[in-house]
Length: 86
Image (cartoon, rainbow, N blue to C red; front, side, top):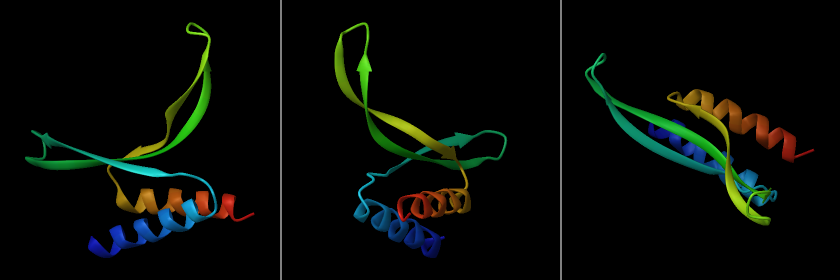
């Protein structure tokens, strides 16, 4: 698991160095069904959007992926890395 988290960190750093800010949030909850803690990972990026009701521009987090799977996080980051690498 630690090895996979290291890959996530390296990919995140490489993407950020190419100019796209990528944040990875983690939340945990207890699953009664599985009788264990589950970690949810969210890949998000800040986007600048216009709020019509307030007539102003605002930075918000845009969710790219939400999953409990580290391999899914890695595959998503690889796709993002390929996209920002041209």
